[in-house]
Structures are given as C-alpha cells and as structure tokens.
Image (cartoon, rainbow, N blue to C red; front, side, top):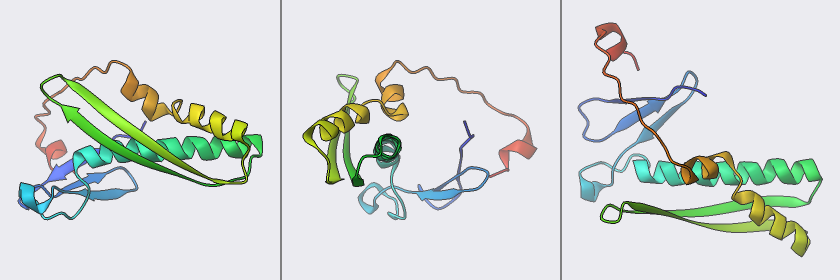
Length: 139
C-alpha cells in the first residue's frame, strides 16, 4: 500500500495529503478555525469508505456482466468519545436495469469492500518519531 504524507505549515489547519502522484487538500470548517478549503479528517474517512464501496460494486457488477449504470454511496460518520464507538451509516443508490436479486447481492457486496472490512476489525497503531531533518522537511 502507498505511503500517505500529511504536511501542515502556518495556515491554520490546511493540510496537504500526498502520495507519489497525488495531492489532496484537507481543512477544517470556518466555525472550527479553518478556511474550509477541503474535507476534514472525518469526511475523508467516510469518503474512503464511500469510494471503496462504489468501486467494489463496479468491479463486481462488471465481472458479473450486470447492467449497473451507476452506484452512489452516501456515508455518514459519527463518533461518540464517551462510549468509544463509531457509526458509519451507508446509504446506497443503485441505478440500472437490475433484478431484485442483483440489487440484494450488490448490497451484500457493499459490506465486503476492503475499507469496510478494515474498519470493522480491530486496528493497531504505531507512532514513530523521525529525527532526521532531511526526512522531516519532505512533503
């Protein structure tokens, strides 16, 4: 998997996420002190699930030869720090001349996308401080 780098400078909360070939600007809304120049971290997390879901559905429908014209995923993400629980509500719109059985199977497949499985399982974290000044200044 690609390494994603986040870099923030003096503009409050505006952060640039980059890989070897892509850059995304993230930010916080004005009411939280940002300038609303991009999605916030929670929106990016929900967006990752939404994107992975519709990509999975596209791959599956194409492999089966099903007439899925488009798939839309609306994902709402909430987190309750008191209960230490997160909730992702995924609402799907499946457009195309699909049978009821095909629609039901696509709904099942939505829960099989890699991001869904990742978020559903326990997650471990490791944070390492890098002291090399040459690495700290890279984007």
